[in-house]
Image 1 (cartoon, rainbow, N blue to C red):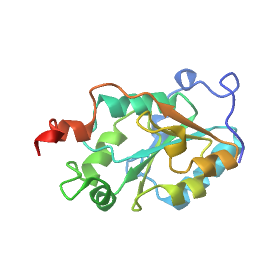
Image 2 (image 1 turned 90 degrees about the horizontal axis):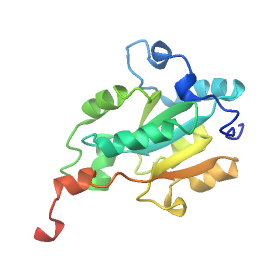
Image 3 (image 1 turned 90 degrees about the vertical axis):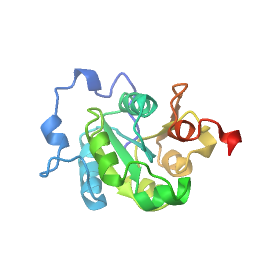
Image 4 (image 1 turned 120 degrees about the vertical axis):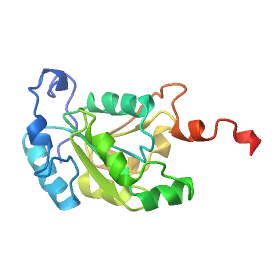
Length: 184
């Protein structure tokens, strides 16, 4: 795996020609399975393109999510979003989650132009995916410290970077569903 390129040598996403058609699978989605993603990853590495990975539930997609995705995309050439399955979200957030099921969350993320690929994972964390994909850059929201980011050791050991993106204040799915957590 090649390490992340410096900002001066990597491709500038804003100056790249739109590659919308190449982002889509034959069925029109950005959803990929792991074998396909790994094959694409090898091609990106050979071409000197950096792969950025972020992950989450992305339930009730809101401006904070969009901010994370846009800022993540600016860090490299290809943005992969690892999306928790419905069962994974329930284990993490409780039986009343997700509010939007997987199909809806996939459709919403698929409409975000800076997202190149989406992969669904069943586990509680994306550790297995991170180990397989070896992204150049791993990104989480600013509610995590670098040391708390799952997969940090894997990415750093392979020469990659781990980055946290500051949150947009006032945008949290959990907070919007529980506006007064003390009133339970």
